[in-house]
Image 1 (cartoon, rainbow, N blue to C red):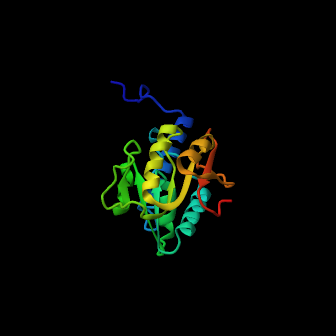
Image 2: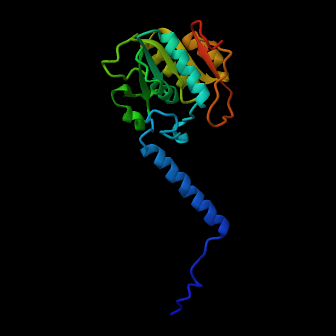
Image 3: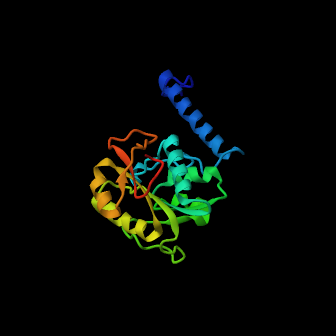
Length: 213
């Protein structure tokens, strides 16, 4: 029996270094999540799932949209985030006392946020909890998961059910005509950015005088 270990496969120094780097990054991420100062609402605390067509906004964009929603909702206002979890997370980071917010999302990982999480499938736009009363939100911010007319139409049903009037929609520039048709919103000057670059140009649309212009 050969005990010198010559037959044991050895990793190249490059592969070994890459593997060590991967494990180090993983340990750092886990360390952040378990550290005392970690905020469970921070963007990135739940990672994107591209299979669910999830693309988180950049930190700057999420902050800008969250600030806009707070101003639009007014003191004591209610904000609904429909398929817009990174804006919800940024709103929760503010720990605001002057507004309340809930998240309507298909991804059940967001159920960690408790009662503010509402399971939402755009294919069933009005399949909502009974306690989610019609026209009970001062502003609805929505980011339909797919750039399709069907997805926008169905999400629009949800938005119109929830909002008292104000709508902030984020979707592709190619959806401008459909957005106006379904929700009466107009394109803003502000251009949202994502944490990862997307091939499709994204824009914001509103139906009120906003700070995004």
